[in-house]
Image (cartoon, rainbow, N blue to C red):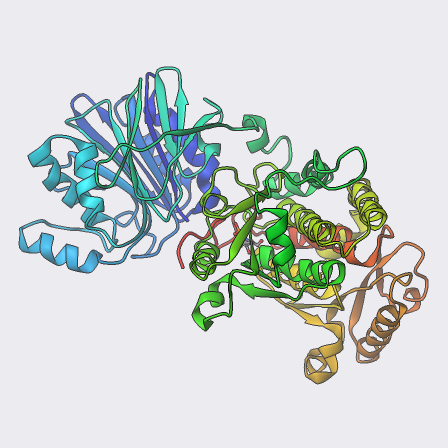
Length: 615
Ligand code: M6R
């Protein structure tokens, strides 16, 4: 969850590292710190609070200039967000500095051992033990990479570590286990970071690090080994987006930019996946068609917004393939001993590709002999690397903590997988597939149209800024959309927001309805299964009769709902199964505007981090 940057080269390490941390601040923002090697020593600064506090500190008390450095932006696990607990952590002699993402589970035992040997530890973190252990190992081997390997072999848990030592001034060393770390390779310089966004302004050449590997960075070479010292294969790749993609580009918030990018993101996810004859070609699905024909059930695992995408995918998969499909929160999955086997296809959905709960769920599935297909937005991340196959969503970098374009593109990818399964298993005719593909191809323009008509939604959001609660209702695929609308509002506006299946209303939640309570209702297309539409129209009447202020999201031309809508938000007509692609957009805009009106931090909501790399 924390953001890490390391640099060795000819530029000012401080400038490179702080600029990198700005790009990674979405990963954690309760404290930040840097260390640079200069004048034969090591200088560090760290501050609780956002990166801006550290920048102010660096202005007031500048560090010496050096060309090797590391930095960190924190999401606290062990120890509160204080100056002392902020990273980097140093050994007692102040010669080694280390930053860390993850949790070192055996830190208490290691700390007791160090204290017995006379080390004085000042923070409450699990990280500080690593600085002391590195210093001890370095004193006998005088090689930071070797010291890191020796220390990593003693650590339990998940970690990315990046360290530097005053006695090896042109070296930065990193290590990873179950936590992200990528290498950037430039001309006479090299970078380490939790995410390529940190160094994309300098280089688009990246190197993936595998599990349990240590990397030594020098200006002219990058050396990767296993924790046991064995040489590792270096897997290089080119980052297919540039620095401008990770900038706000004139928008006040990344979230606004990412909402606006959705038409393109949706189109990019479809790009190159439909052949001239209108059939699907999913090259990255490396599971043999013969195996896909043998699949007897699909299980989707994911968290948060990605889980909502999975819930919607279930409707499409079951409808188009007639395969049973389960959707499960990744954090619950492996703990209930799920029934899996060689004929189960597990789909792991994750924007970041680093969510620990999802990673653990997919590992569990593979242990049971199931095939795993990842739907992911982040090239080279752990989840696709550990899966049998991957379908990238091509949404471009998503920086705002609240997921928007990733969600829409996850949906598109899920529809593609469902259609592909229908194609190879013969449950869908070619012309049926082509018809859905045509509908999907029109979604980009439809989302554009939704975005053009959002001013009344923004005005409505502003008018509700002093409300405490908003409810969301939906049926069928509208139900997960209701959950997603509520999640957006919780995380951004810090309001009590609940999503319900509209049919469940009478089984309890209707007791929540009171005078002027805003209730957002997602209305299915009247052209689809009209029974769904009619039922929700009744639900709207029921809540309105009890005083609710109804905010109705319905497709253009649906006049049946108009008499019962206090506020009517129109969305373009789409087939029922695809409606979430357009219906979610007003909810994103609504939450973003409400958060702004309430004075909240839109891109970095309190207590959250973009990728959740601890369980
Ligand atoms: O990177 P992932 O897609 O695996 O992340 C999953 C969730 O943590 C994420 O969707 C989270 O719920 C978002 N902040 C919601 O906006």
